[in-house]
Image 1 (cartoon, one colour):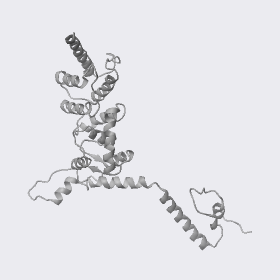
Image 2 (spheres, rainbow, N blue to C red; image 1 turned 90 degrees about the vertical axis):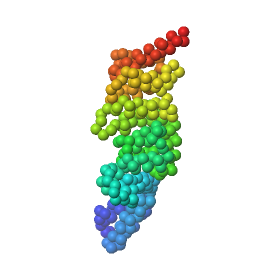
Image 3 (cartoon, helix red, strand yellow; image 1 turned 180 degrees about the vertical axis):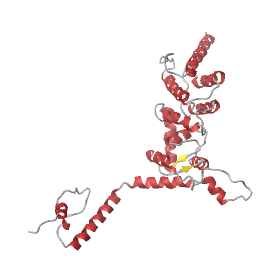
Image 4 (spheres, helix red, strand yellow; image 1 turned 135 degrees about the vertical axis):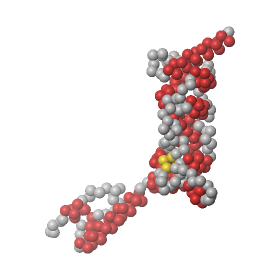
Length: 295
């Protein structure tokens, strides 16, 4: 009886499940070294081909498709100027240069992409999309955020992405603890200009109007027109910028006031920003005047 080598013994043992290796390895036990080498190569080739054919194609092809789509929107202004040179025009600085920013879509490309999705910047769903894609600013998209975001939403082409907008539009006003909450928090980052730590009041006011009225979440209850009161309070009483803490705590206040407009949850000892303490007093005063007028 011939002595088996460790390789022959290993290959002869039934240790490979058919689901992983759907072909026989026992035929390698016998044969000349040349035959074994040939069959080993066949085994490795079949193994590689099997796993390639059984790899989920939607994952790899989806990533490829999204990367190609991303690349079509890079360098919009750069390419336009290259195709239509104006000899007397001064060169303009732009981030939309594919050589300098291979993983970034700048302002021109971002605007073009949103237009191709059929979106207007006045729509609150734009903020939801930019949040889902992890956009660092209003005029910039990153490759990783774009690919990961759309993969998570299972939309790898423009047609599917347009369809996804419908569900995002319906989710924004109906999910105060879900999509609305994440969109609201991320909007502060989107709205900040480079180097800023606070939002100008005028800018914050515009975003509050966009996010807290239909077709987004409506900050309004049967007894209290909250958004109108908030805008009135800011115009009369608040002259400073809006910090991140003020922005986020206002979002918490919005959700609690929608759950209980009587403000039974309110406490002066709570860790609310001073502006919201003042706003509560402002609302109570408004309500008192309203009750007096009814009487």
